[in-house]
Image (cartoon, rainbow, N blue to C red; front, side, top):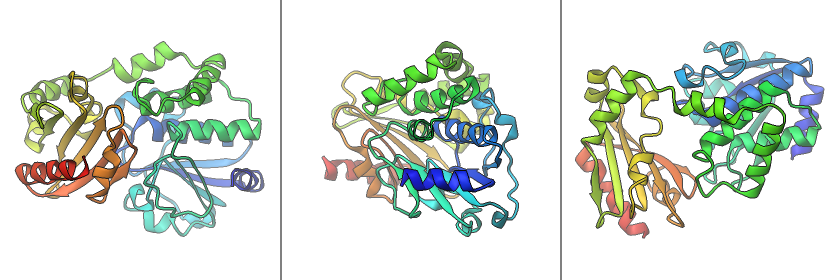
Length: 317
């Protein structure tokens, strides 16, 4: 399959690159790295994302070239859908993008539903960034500092700073190659993890008041409400990383962040330690992800949503 993707790249001239809503480091780093390689090859490439780029990822090389208006997809020889297990995760333009001349999915989520027959998928890979790195290696492409910076950021964020169980020897080897070719680990980490806005710190302070422990202190959770975001001047992008706070407590095996959405839903981000499989839990509610990191959405007030997910955890244990 990877050779067919390479052939499509070599034969094509115009490419669309996109990823999921609620952008994270893996999505953005992967998009930007692929964009830069295509440009280096003399191709025309456009990155379209429905959502704006979060502030702490705007330092990534070429991030200023991302657009949020989508032209006629028929002009593109192929559309790359990165870090998406389902086409719908692109957002409102999914129906248009699926009509592209050729659709290529590069993804690492074990919940991938196989929406594209042409794909580079590996559920054991740490990140889509690691798969993009694998693609470039197969293409024998020389990766400059900007490309390596983007791929390192992609891998770094989806492994939780190389702390999660998805960090393999292949992951660390890829990261070492990226550093060897110009990625600066300290500079990248400082931009991502040490550049929080005052609004995020205010939201963190308010959210910590909601910390709750269930199942004899084995499940920890935090709640972010719409009112908390309004009061602190925060936005959805400022919730990134909050789910890791309960996970850092000794004895916690599952961490949950409940984020209230605008349509009577709560988005649930789940993290786990050791062999606890939160992907199975998320799947019960139409979500997915990985064994130690998954997400889903449940409709209802916070008490109802908590009861449902805790019941799901009990049934899965």
